[in-house]
Amino acid sequence: MHPRLIRIIDQIEDSDLRKKVRKLLLEPQIIVEGSVYSGMGFEISPAGLYKHHSYPGGLLDHTIATAELALSLAKIVKEIYHGSVDRDLVLSGIILHDVFKTLIYQSEKGYRYVNSDLGERLDHLSLITAELIRRNFPIDLVHIVCAHHGGQAGPTWPRTVEALICHLADQTDSQLNGEVLRAARQLVRRVIGEEIPLLSSEEAFNIVNEKTLHGLEGVQKAFSRIMKSRSPSGKTA
Ligand SMILES: [Fe+2]
Ligand SMILES: [Fe+2]
Image 1 (cartoon, protein in one colour):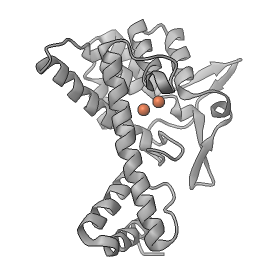
Image 2 (image 1 turned 120 degrees about the vertical axis):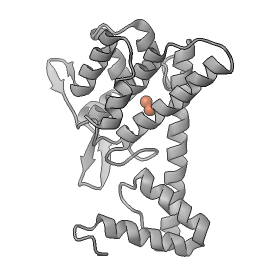
Image 3 (image 1 turned 135 degrees about the vertical axis):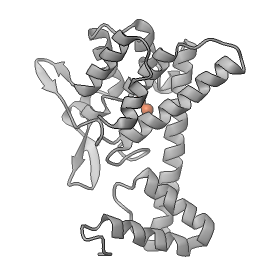
Image 4 (image 1 turned 135 degrees about the horizontal axis):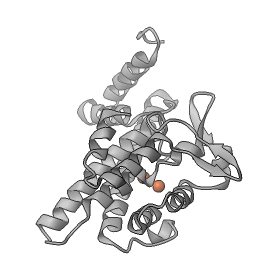
């Protein structure tokens, strides 16, 4: 398991909950009609098909970024508004909220993602909600996960402070990432006339930063650097 993820899991103080969360992360699988669905590993999975974090490792980046945002929000609630927040529930909710994206996507020809057979029929939120109930997780944690898309895009509104924090953190990181990916893709299309497949957040921020500093020439340079770093020999193809 990735050390950054371990650091977040280790912050869950309740040892029973921590063990259950770790177990699900190590075995992100579900049985439907007798068939076991395991999908791809958490660390190589994307968190989206195209809109946000749609690259290998995207789910890991999204989970870590969302955890950081949620912890900051929890701190604000406590220290500025003097409200109370169950930190264990927030951390567990964030770690698990998108874990079954590993099951609903699959790589196609190595340069894009499509829905898996399971993903064609069921979404990650329904799958994880069902599995959390089956594994006897606390109802307040199931609620956080079930409500993480908010009431307009998901089955229920966040109705606890912890669920609201997780929803807002998830939405913020998805939007932050999505906007930068979109801008970087547009810039590369404009300058190069093609798209960089599986563009990562790091690459996208690099392109946008270069545009800010050096205009379209910076975009050209960033593109060349990215393609060079991707080629097996490290030389521009
Ligand atoms: Fe989600
Ligand atoms: Fe998410």
